[in-house]
Amino acid sequence: MIAIARMQVPVILLEFDGVLVTTPIWRPVELLADGFMKFNEKAAGNLNRIIELTGAELILTTTHRITYGIDEWCRLLATRGIRAPRISKINEAATISAMSKRAAEIEAWVTKCGVKNYVVIDDDSSINGLPDFIKNRFVQTKPMLGLDDESARKALGILRSRIN
Image (cartoon, rainbow, N blue to C red; front, side, top):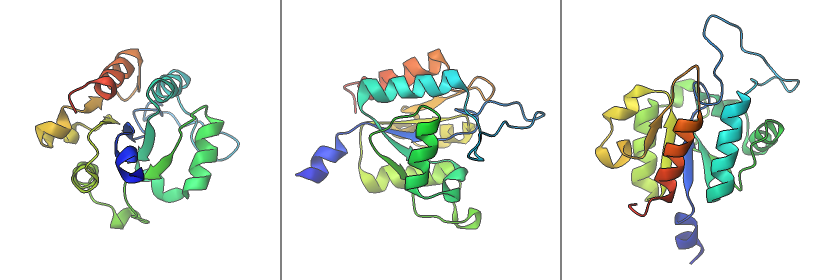
């Protein structure tokens, strides 16, 4: 019964670069005191708003996920104003060489987990190459804008849709 209830919780599959971190590639990324990148405040606020309105969990798809354990990610995200009820990683890959391409990892996760109410938020256009049932739940951000108001509205619409 618990597993069924959990499957109904909305899920955000989340990349950081180009979604929460929007520093142009020609400028150094600002780091906070904890040594991790500063997030675009508007993008972080939009993500937090989506989480608050839907109760969505975060699944980290970012390559940065291998840098820290879940407890540390909870602290790092909280420091940046992100308050998710649950945070996990898309898989157990612990090194860059153990990772597949992000699109393949997302497709494997969707297939394995059977979660129907999710949104993929990423700036990576390769996600568009996935099957329509995944691509239709994809919000592609613009790298230097990140999770702006328009992208946030689209993500919220996907999570609130009755077509899962």
